[in-house]
Image 1 (cartoon, rainbow, N blue to C red):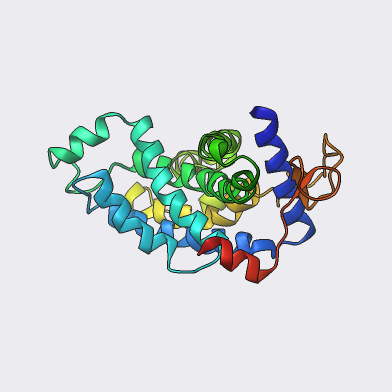
Image 2 (tube, one colour; image 1 turned 90 degrees about the vertical axis):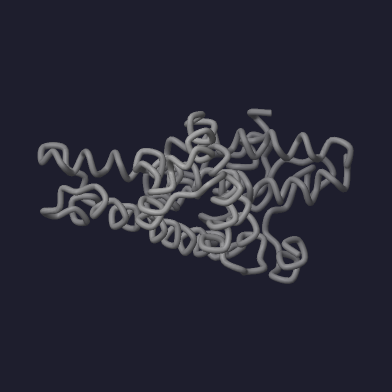
Length: 257
């Protein structure tokens, strides 16, 4: 499963390096990331009574109502990110049930939410790619395969996403100041005032990291199965047993419906 997840992630990266507009994923991810950054200050002052309520609130606010495959992946990523934050913070459910988060969520939790969202967005997008093809060839295995691949992909990229809280802490120490965070913080030392701005400033970097658009990740690795850059290994799909990743807008809209 690790190799399959790596193959699909590599194919997606290659596709986006060749054409940043592919799937509309890059621009959709940036827009969603900015919307998420904009909601953080509100979440810091207004909590939720349950995880379901939090998801119901964030999905339209962050995911919007677009109809492409990328839009649908963003909406699923919101729900997946809330799930992952609950796993990281097992005390969250009890606290919400007791009304402890009614006055807002702690910033360490919100920074985790920001970080895992971008990773889950990539995983959920590839889940859709896998689902569309695996169900055609092995429908009885599709649900398990999709979940495992999406989770593995998210695990691979989550540590690449900058964490706003860590950037704020670094900016507070001049000797270790991070340029993107420092410009947002300025003379402000209050996390509640600074972190939303830091989160927004980090969006291009976060998206660039997970979608391999940054210079540091720009080298194109040779695909282990010899597939062209627009394909991932998948028996019976595309040339030489490869799964095609690039599609027309009509195909995207049909898959997202």
